[in-house]
Length: 482
Image 1: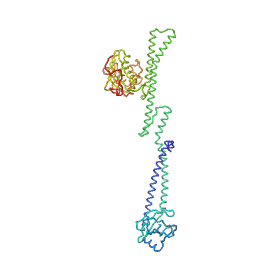
Image 2: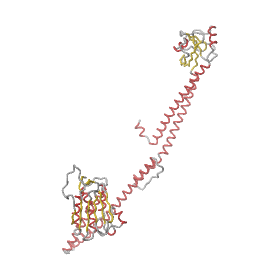
Image 3: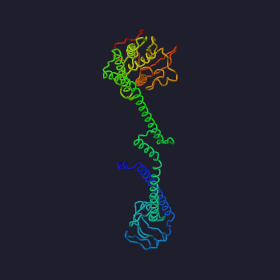
Image 4: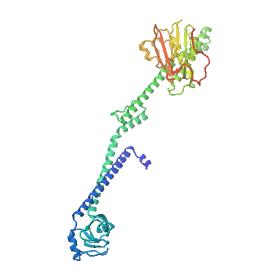
């Protein structure tokens, strides 16, 4: 049954459920009304039995005149009934005689109890000749007998049958009307769902993420529509960013590829023309090719790093590692790239939970950025606060204009003044991504006295957890100048 119901369209299910609910409610109300009316009619019949009692003197006269006699169960009497009731006498032994009526009624123990004076009256229902009677038995004053007055229940059964017919017709009409109203309400209520369904099917069919559903109100359907609009907007933004990444990557790849092709064409033409290049020029050309290949490899690696979703696993296992040790190694690598730059360090112990290789690459990128913009013979300060876990990298270059600070962590963004310098514009974007993945924060701001200061904060502690063995290399930190 449940599977059949689930196989119906939602609109039909709603209409059916409304019709069933109304049918149950109408049936319950109709039954309650029928029972109440029946009780009222029975009470009215009882009142009529009490009000239309045959006078005791009249019954005594009938007995004395010999018109009341014992009759068998099967015998029918033709005595006129002036009171429109069945009247019989019952003595203390349970014998009966008919006074008025068409058939005798069975004598119950309650009737005998009334005749013996044990009860004031008896009111009950009996069946005689296949017909139900409502019976009232009261004592016959001055005798050892009781008088039973009965009227057929058919008087109220006809009214109850008519009422049942009327209630049935009303119930059927109500159920049919409820079913129709359910269809109309389901159609009106599901209209927003139909719009949402059409929008989803349109997106699936055309991949058009610009579709938006009009939202009215604050109900569940409106919330669902807002969620759908937010989802399509996020998907559209993600697709735009993906297309922008592809376009920017293509633009960045075009420069080294063009340079590579030019240099290789020059080498090939010199060989084909049997006019070898001077050894110095040839060596310089090959060094340029090697540098451009290295630049391409670095760019491809950066693109692979940025292509992973934020929720994707990092390139290595996440573990407890010393940020001071990573910064120490990053400083040594930065010195190799800027031999004329002085780098000072003050690295207090600070342990974080991160992927060591990715975090070291992020710190190296910060130092490379500082080296790139430092003037010849300049100084870079690297400080790690052991109480807050804040790593500061400060250079003394030209600094970053205020209007460019919001864009420094964007992919492929490069300051207009730095576009002639090597790099893909992905370094700081990778830094921000790695720090965010490790639960930290990164920011760049102008340093007092000129230059730029990068501030990196990662959650951690100055000592490793008890289960983490001490790491070798790097030491607890200190101050040094190179």
